[in-house]
Length: 331
Image (cartoon, rainbow, N blue to C red; front, side, top):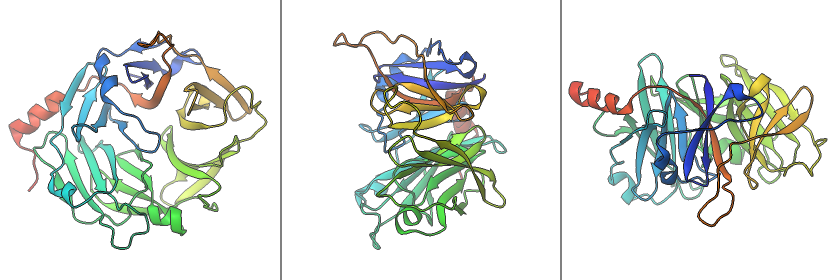
């Protein structure tokens, strides 16, 4: 299936929209409609992820993960992270969902972080789960603790911003985890002055590439794209300027992915609308969404959040069953 975006409207229902639909998204309601009520969204945490045709999310009430294929309406519950990893740790957690094309494995990575970024005695711990196995495995050492803001996945590697690099300076401010080899790596980000008091920073996947966004809380946004991984070469390819009429949209939007004709697709944080930005023409336009209807209070349902998702017919339930049959657990 072509690249689509998955849309959640007021946490009630899921829709998908093919990329080719352009400025008018013709929503296809995902059969597994109840999925929307099980996902909690917070702009500062990654609670839903997509890779290899499957989606994963964390259910806060049960403190466990689910992996699903919303296209075919299948969902499996992942074994809980061992309580031993929680009982002596009260800080926030970070997690990522990756797929290795070479080994055909889906893996969840769960990392516990200190309550304070700069706590020298803060405990950082990690566990990993392979879809189809019976339990989580310990990650002996997490050398580059991430910030709380989530991650992006590209070609079987999870990328995130490093706490120390972002808050204390340093050239290596991006960390990664290879899903196949299970090795960590630190990357040098773009040469930009990091000042968390003047701007926020996040990573996003644009096409097949990782991008670094500097957002100074206005329409002045700069985006660097990692074009050469071997030499860690970042190119400043987008500069969203303030010439776009502020009356058209609120300025607080977050870039999601590439859209039609290479445009940037973004979501506004408060009005919950989708917009597309043409970097060549320096034009910002609204992307028409499906009619979501009304909520229980009689108000029009609003867009809740959007993620990039490549649909598939892969069965997570079958992967779980095959794992049990052939015992893929590693000692």
